[in-house]
Length: 334
Image 1: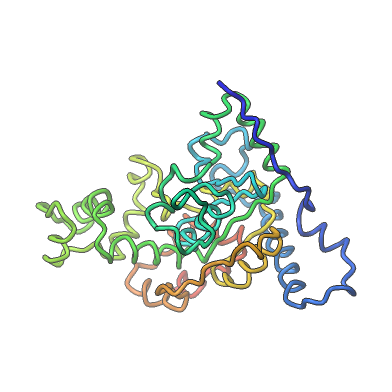
Image 2: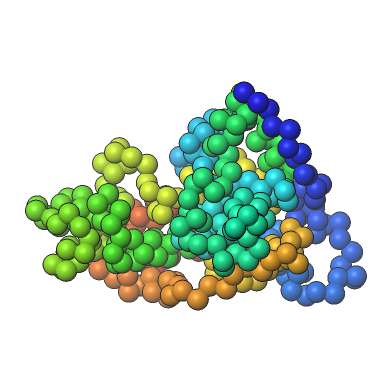
């Protein structure tokens, strides 16, 4: 195999924002917004590190090392060697637009021979095509036995970021986009088994449009049952749209430099592009789509039995705790 000779393009940045904040002369700082953002980052990172270090707070895979993570679980870490950036994408958390940004930065996709400059010009189907992105799980094919060593070098020197959102709201958003809209793939792979198992339907149409035409749709209750059913994970790991963030991005094994939240997307995105020193190259695309709001939680969960809600919280508890989302007490008590 050939070891790549492409340069690592590493810009030595502060290890993390906490060090950055401590060694900073605030008197020269003009921008109130950046100051608030920096404090917010320190707080988010501190919360994450404290719970990762807290031995009384446990969840599956928490204590394994980076070397223990199988290659196929590193497929959400997208690498841009040109700017020294690693992005862990979480579906249903503005990941389409962040992937677009990564394509522009890494120049991994050409439009008539020229790299895309405007993220919004990149067609959606290219954005989610896995061949478009260099991800950690592809390192093995490219670098063979050097791959883990190289990953660790890049994890140490590159700026690593992810975006998260309230775990229950993310589930509602996943349900809305995959089961309330006609989606052939999700109908066949997930809706048909759910309708058979939890709604006692037997002869189901093979196409989603026929099913919708006949009023056969997965209910939110079916979906929650599916998530809580121990048989589900025995068949295959959760689909990425509802897999927990700690399983997608390994936040106790990877020391993220920036934790963005969907709830503060615009400010976080602008600040991150500034930190990466690429704010003159591009802007984060505005999101106009019908975004699931956290105020909807009560309505969505109203018909879900209390015991299920409590089980569901247990299933996603690590995501709530690690990323500082308050426990939804109103949903977990009678």
